[in-house]
Length: 251
Image (cartoon, rainbow, N blue to C red; front, side):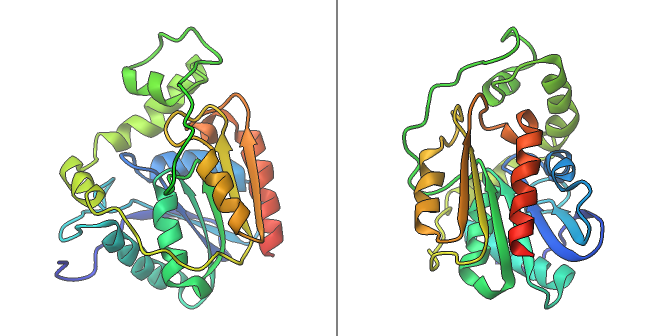
């Protein structure tokens, strides 16, 4: 049980309508920032807010014992940084689980959801990992299992934006939260949504994202070829186009 509000470390860029951008498991805001800042580049009127999730980066997880606790922290954080303005939420991987929890608990506050390679209930048909570019022997094992585009450029991104956050992760807290991972389902999301998956995503696949899109009336769904779970790194131009369309639909 938390003794008081969790202090959430974050960085932000721009001004205007708030957009909370959530990273995946075992990293921190730096990976999301590196992937989504180019996607939002040139868009006026969007204030991009990148928090460190509890137990990762510089946000502690004391007293946080479940995914539901994390959602509670994020809703409190959103209230502090966004006030009464409905905000956007974009998320990668496990961050999408918490984004869905936020929308389920406070649907009127979330103006749009963009879920990239989302970790969702009902994962199925996950493909085998396959390298599509590069020699296949660069970097460490985590890099080789994460990226399907294994070029020196991607290795540099991994070392600059993924590794530093991974070194700060509180493994015990992540395991504790993961042991109570389920969240109560909400009603189908009825604001503009975007679901993007990698055809070669050997972590979460693409089928669950398409299943969710079928249940959301206002969802755009895309499955991108020749990319995996590191899609935001590997397909930045396509991600930017999809994010731009999503923001336009919200506006």
